Length: 267
Image (cartoon, rainbow, N blue to C red):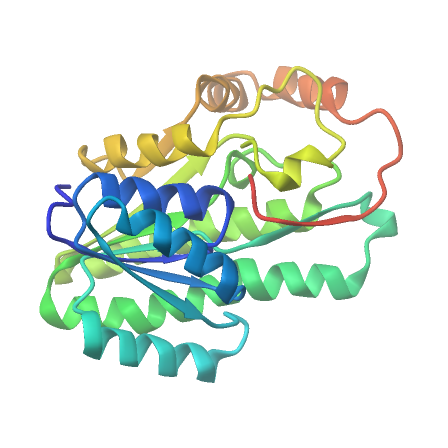
């Protein structure tokens, strides 16, 4: 996909992977990049950086768990800056906790933001793309959307759901010439990871590696873009040696009981 002169909407753009993707799109020649997150000040900082690459950046502060507000923001943005050529759904939150100690309020927050927030934006933008028979949607899942991780049960559940949702949407929107892609990065070095109880032997990717991997993947026609050699290896073991993979996950899991850490998305 050639981003030269294109318009993109990126959710979760104030930090982490979303921020890196927005900046990389500007480097690739996108003309307009709409940035969605809750923190307006951080969005403005990202917008300032993006403008250095010659792109117009538009910060849009909205809570994706509030469908009415999202509808208003997306409709106005489409009117003012659309149509969108690319939607990247990157917004999300993660809490690390042993399941038996999970806070249900935090679990609901993960489900609402990671899954329903993504669903709402995709529904609003996807319908518009389908009507003009053009567009690309990228849903950012995770390696944990293919291989579940202990202490990340709710997060894994949302990422598995995103994989299934994207697969279904890919078939539904294909007749409308809208491409739908899943992005599957492995553990990524964000502020979230810095305070997580990490799994043994896992080497985090940089956010820049994920963003560049997305651009490379969009130039292919593959429906799933897997980032990082660890992801490729884990998926191979999960498919062909599932028992060995289960044993490896148990060995790699954090050895100490895990408290709950609220952080922005990074996996």
